[in-house]
Length: 408
Ligand SMILES: NC(=O)c1ccc[n+]([C@@H]2O[C@H](COP(=O)([O-])OP(=O)(O)OC[C@H]3O[C@@H](n4cnc5c(N)ncnc54)[C@H](O)[C@@H]3O)[C@@H](O)[C@H]2O)c1
Image (tube, rainbow, N blue to C red):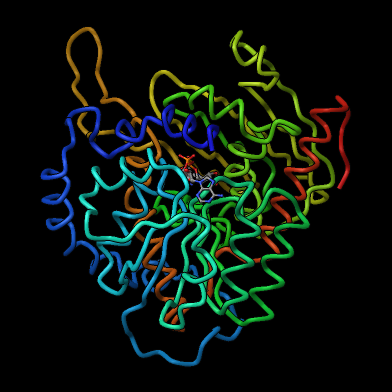
């Protein structure tokens, strides 16, 4: 419990709110933003798989009904990403009815209540799980607790017949992820893992260029993931200390990109280089910079460069080079203006962090999950993709530990 309270104490939830660099966001401001943005929901809805034409999954729908209805949902975890992103989107989604939130930290509960004006929403602790999940009127559960709790919470929820959307990664190990997806198949309920870049328009355009074979045979891919702001040292001290948390917690997004953009081509090897630039990270024993080199049987080579801190803002990019072309996913900026004067030009800053950069993607992710509940779609991120991503993570960590190339 002390660790949980510390985690929250060190989690700068407020600084992650969209626009938080400019506004001291208070409840009143937030409520007005929520109500103004509700109408946007209809623009995002259904645009994901129809207008982009990306959903090519031939597997049968999980449920047969296509009738839209409201779904009763519960949320596990009221921490940083839940409070700054997901709970707001659940409240905005006109097809979801938030029944309760569960979190074991009184500090997190109090902060979440104040931030989102949730004084009428019941909050529970993990001791109440059994009765909450036994509620037959509950349709789905969102899992936003720390990664080491995911697999158990996901399986508990699925086994009681609830659909699940979880933050990434779905589990800490290959075996955990397999356990979750096997359970989802057994109970025939949707399980969606939240790799939100899949729902971002810029990354989707690049994906489409590979899908359409517009680039020809792929030769090189670079995926850059540099975080902003630097996560708290408390978080970095408590995340996957037996492994390499820059790979398992952060570069896992970039690895998911390689899996998605290659249509799940299996690399033959992974080699990790890393460094601890920050003296506190050195003391913690976890690198703050890492580069992973992936080699594929087709000849494709991929480089993932990952850093815990980019002082100029949240920097997430992709470049793919093929025999017939090149595709880039560049960073959007806080404003698209360019100011040119005699001695040079000026661009606006990159977004500060993930809630701002992926604001629309996170909203689409939730809406896509509701489409899965409706039986209109199946989860965009597939079991085989999540398993391949975790295999690459595990090989990357093996290479980090041995200093050798790890073969898949
Ligand atoms: N997609 C992204 O870009 C992104 C960004 C940040 C975090 N995440 C993921 O989101 C998840 C949560 O991360 P966070 O940064 O919000 O963490 P956090 O520590 O801020 O929040 C987690 C919350 O869960 C609560 N909690 C911990 N153990 C619990 C338990 N056993 N039962 C009930 N509640 C418990 C904590 O009190 C805390 O409030 C992680 O899996 C992380 O990988 C994803």
